[in-house]
Amino acid sequence: MPGRPLPTPDGPPSGRRPRARLVAVVALAAGVALAVVLVVVLVVVRPGGGDDDVPTDAVPAQVGRVSEALEVLPSDATSLVFVDRQALADDVGVDRTTPPDAYAAALRSPLGRAVRGTDLLGSLRAMDAGGAAYDERDVEWAATAGTPEGSITVHRVADDVDLDGLVLDLSASGLAATDVGGDRTRLSPGPLSPAAVTTAGALGGYPPSFRDVLVDPVRHLVVTGSRELLDREPAVLDGGEGLTDDRLLDEAVGAETGDTVMVLAQAPPACTGERARAARERAEAQVGLGLEGLGVPEATAVLVDAGGAPSGGSSGAGGPGVRARLVFASTDAAAADLAARRGYVAGGRYAAAQAPVRDLGTAVLRQEGRVVDLDLDLVDPGTVRDLASTGDGFLACPG
Image (cartoon, rainbow, N blue to C red):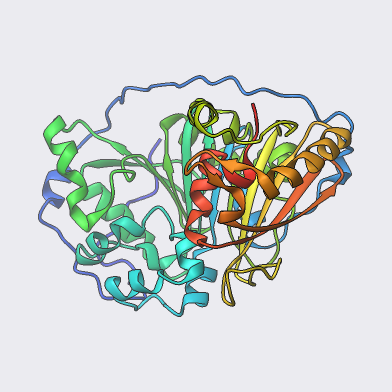
């Protein structure tokens, strides 16, 4: 069935910065047909159960842009990285016209060091120089979800971003465009040689993640990720089950507020992974960590707010507010962990540096049902992502 006609080079401007449209490879793209791409399926078994004692209406309602992101991510996600880039930009004082070097310099603030921008930050200079249809500065929010079938990343871009221009760029880079309904365009690799595919991203400076792309101009979304997830994504966008239907991760990020700039969530949590276990074993053999009595949560989340450290601790004015949430199988399990974690925070050690946990900062702990909350005031805000990804320090567990 014929698809929607591809946009022409005379399409609408981006409304942000003048673009240097590169057309050297357009002639090559005109002869590119659709290809069959090798599909690699990664199968991961996700543990379930453990929330039988929690009624459905006990899950806090989401607000703000985090909720918008959860609605368009797959319901079987086991991890989430969400960044409200617009809120971050407002806090550090940059906008869409800020030059790349000045933009990077602004992220040296406490909040900038904690959040570190979106997945496009490392490609900002290349995309700016290449005249890409959009870059880091044009993203309102970005969210990446990990699932048993791979990962998927969604960029919600500014309303005036030239998404027709994005389709043209990627088509000229060797991707074949297909209308998948709802005014959406799917771009996938065509029958190029391996060498050509390797160099195709040079047009516009787009990163390697722009190899399989779904563009939704109505909702101003650009979606990249595994082929299997992109095949499923139109159904999610049309009202199918999203991550808001996953009670475990939804509960883990239930403390999100209108000031939330970043969310890092995992179910099962990082502290149960092989990397964390190996680091604990090495540290235990040398200094001991004091993990006795800590519980093993079913999910964890770290939320970073622009509103300042809630505990009023030692990091000083201007530090971001950081909350860690640990979701347990029951209220009793959470109560037992709370008692043990208070002792661990006061006198335990964390694996990465084999140093006292209190060297990381201060924490105020409390329990809400089966959730243990820690309001953190970190000495170095730049440790937020590392603590979340390794399950170390305040998020440690013996699992």
